[in-house]
Image (cartoon, rainbow, N blue to C red; front, side):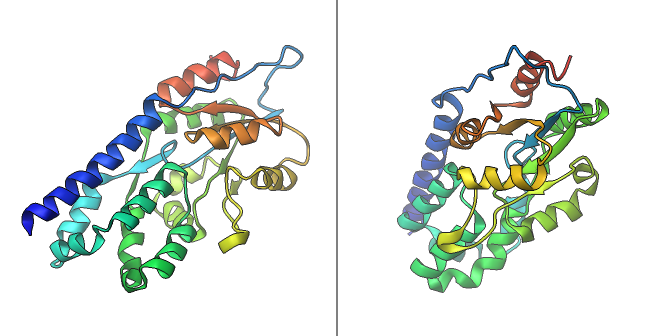
Length: 248
């Protein structure tokens, strides 16, 4: 039994490693196109950030500590090692899926695991700031740029993040998150998500620079005339903002 559990753990770890490496090394980078006819200025530009894996990242030591405290941790491991569940979790991870989608899938395919929803929430809430990105955001604010958020985060997780890191969210002017549920769920990279953001938060027609680690979301934003930066790491982000004339 132990050998079987270890084998499934290895397979799950290998699957997530392959996905991570694919995202890191094989997605095409998006180069920003700086238009000759205008300059990006603090008064006329909005810098729009994604949250997960751009501003915040999972705090894995806290996740492991959380699980290690549970007396039923080995039983949980056995219950969660299900190929379909692991596959769907990997798909959501890669496609920036939402919490709403995960709960809907769990309720439909694994209703007996719904009792662990509070645990799943606790795991997802274990986040830590990416310090270099926070430094960039603070530099943007000092220069007078408006900084907004466009994320697929749900309202409950947003409230938790805001209460845990109020000093970080103090830098953001507006926050756009998912809305609706089920088939009516509105999230990135849906074009309507960006249209709603523009109609609600950019009625005065400022230029928008959108930063996201998920390439399809960047491409979707570009279709609406938004300048896109495909986030790789803070250093690359700073270089791209410098090329746009936003940072020195």
